[in-house]
Length: 172
Image 1 (cartoon, rainbow, N blue to C red):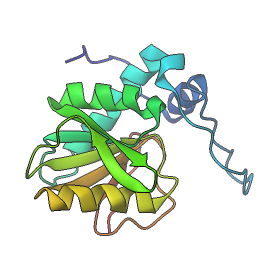
Image 2 (spheres, helix red, strand yellow):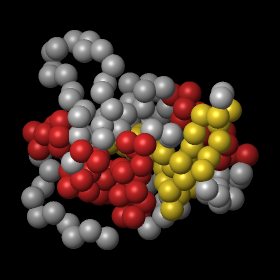
Image 3 (cartoon, rainbow, N blue to C red):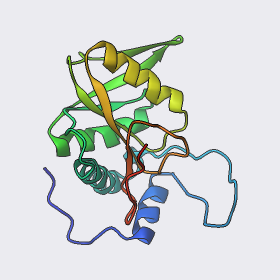
Image 4 (cartoon, rainbow, N blue to C red):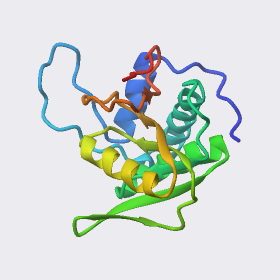
């Protein structure tokens, strides 16, 4: 476990940490700014620590079954966040990948796992559904999606959480 940061994460501080990792959000009222750039925790390890710890705290506060597995999609950038969240929750990380149109995973997938999908932002809800289908075949389920940015998609019935200060859980 990391030592808690005594400075609360403010909205401006949150945006600054995202920007240090390469994810700049459009200002309110800017309208469509195109696709979000990918957040990379390796560009700002200290920021990734704070954001990952905040994501783990948000996941723990959801009230769904406590996850016993952290899952990330194939993007290497999500591995840093996934590692921090998994360490904070005391779980393992499994990376899911696209194998020429089939969904696979690296490492062993525990049976009956309650998983949280960790990402910077859900860019395609089909990825979450594909991960959920693989987990379902192993007797498990996705109990939450944790992202740095709230999803722009309906992920029902899976609750979505974000580490953004003052954000609430986006539920189905």
